Amino acid sequence: MTAIEPGLRRLPLSGAVNFRDLGGYETADGRRLRWGRVFRSDSLAELGEADLALLQSLGLRTVCDLRGEPEREHKPNRALGPEVTTHAIGFMPHGGEELLAGARDGSLGPAEIETRVQDIYRRFVVEQSAIFARLLRLIADTDSLPLVFHCTSGRDRTGFATAMLLTALGVPRATIEADYAMSNDYRRDLTFQVGGIVAPEVMAALTQAHPSYLAAALSTIDQHHDSAERYLREALGLDDTTRARLEALLLE
Image (cartoon, rainbow, N blue to C red):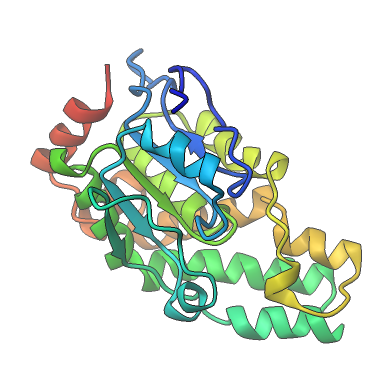
């Protein structure tokens, strides 16, 4: 079994292209996230035997699956071992099926896709806060760590969840945006999900981590809650006790 050395951002897995350690990010007050505590990823359905062996070396205890039930049934995750607990807490983004159908039949171009994805991110804030709140509570449980949370491509639901976790830990906005954009370097092939022949520019709009997507969510937070801090408290239930626990578990 090959051990992973601390400090490696993206893990070299053949069946998950966007599996990343959130360790090492610096907070505004100069602390850093611990390596090997929390990971973000794309689907874990296609992990190979070597991947499973490598992941076992992480000592994972928890998987939080942010995919909706149809996605989970279509691409079930590989089992990571009896000691790993999976929480299927996810959802299919609003209008996701229609978005894929429009890309498949050519009725939606890149600009319309970008507009619809921005709406999906806005709905993360106003409709799906309970799910992201549950994820933060799981991460704040010492018995859950090390933990990985993921969706299908590791960009949208996982990207927003990561942004909220890093915000809660005091990581600056510029670092959060850079982490979000890193998904552009590790794009999962979503041909199986879209189906048919899709124009490259349409597929790019579907798979890219466009700055306007995350910006749409962050601006919605400001509109509805005035600030990310108030959103964390009011919508995600991040009280002082839970925040202190997150900091103690995840910050050096």
